[in-house]
Image (cartoon, rainbow, N blue to C red; front, side, top):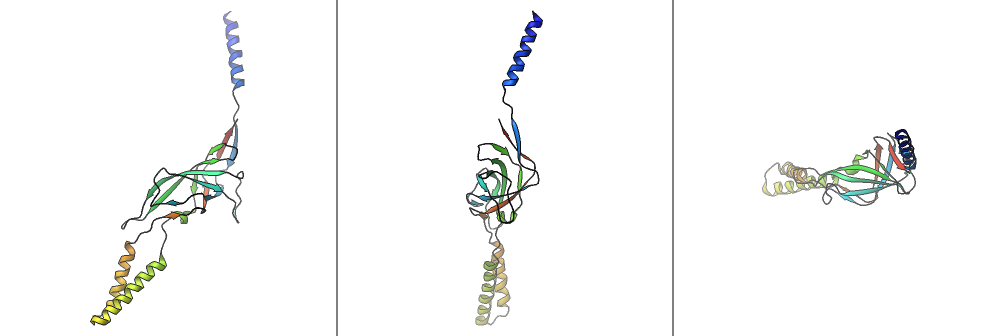
Length: 191
């Protein structure tokens, strides 16, 4: 009787395992592959907070074709952010979380943003040059009126001092293409 119960339990367990769905796994992005995505909303070091979510629409570009299903969305969040201050540059760090396929499946996606130029503070060379030259001109004019030499250099120095205290926030506009590099295979599971 005990053997019959054990056999019945074994058959029942086998039937239960057979009833469980089998998960099919598909690699949707291989380690090292480059994925391009267009930002669907603006990000800013001034207004966004750590944890804010963002999405990118996977895009083909002139020089690069993505190997993802059309309509795939790349999901991520802001992992670090600080606005610009007089003494500190702005920072904005992005973390990539998932690939959301058009059929509803998701794949965890460990990727690094490799197009860093888009998420760094902008340099304002024209603005900064104009302030320095303007300071030099003002210093020259003041020097000419007062008869004190060195006004041009002093004005340029004052302009330079002003420029070094002017920091810019980071703004990544909607539609900006970010280049991502997969750090590991992105595997989607489906039943």
